[in-house]
Image (cartoon, rainbow, N blue to C red; front, side, top):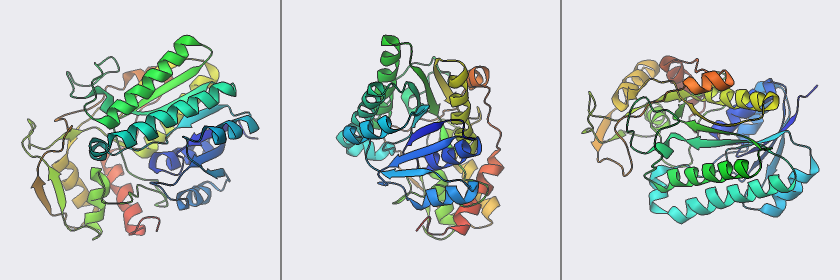
Length: 339
């Protein structure tokens, strides 16, 4: 018997699809809304195949408040997990209004529709970009918030709306999850990260060079103050991340709260370290060239995740080797992604 019905925005995307797997396997029923602007409906067919369970899929845009109102009025949803949003830092610098329209206006429409339908459990997919340049390491949730690009600022605005909503009405239960750098894929090799254009994230770029879709990795800057000159990031396996959402949901069902939590591993790896690890795993050469730094890139960032362990009983389980092996299995078996 199903525990509860969960409404998942952007559920066909990379993190959303992996979270749908974990929700279904934990006994929840799932309804997904997605406009498929940067995802494939095929990912949800694969979710069904992995779990042997069905889920409801609606094609729609979260800015369509009338549609959200209708959908949220039809079913007594136990909560909403909100992934839908544009997510490329470099693109956000070029077309900021597109990011504010989609991410911010879409989230306002969603929260308004939830409020109207008395659905007050909300888990938000935020980002470590809200911290900007780290002032200390590891980064805790109390770090100053100073995002240095429109993508990060859009995430922070939504966080602030959610906090204000809770302060105005403490009957809301809200968890804001600040992700560090999601990588990896489901161990089945059936779902993984499948960017529409040239990848803006490192791991899919490495995978596409290793499989022959791209010729050369461009490393954006080798003059950071790090041991090898390249940026250091906290890479977290997407399945660990997905399980963090289920843990957050289970916590809110037993103990209403307003929580802001980092999800990462607490360990940093440089761009060149990840490249070497992936080259070993794939046993394919990954040639690279040094390019200029990208606007908004920081030198080093990794998380303190003690609060997530304390509040929702979550800790990352997967190693860097797992991340590389699972990414390579996905890319090798799906050389052109879902298409």
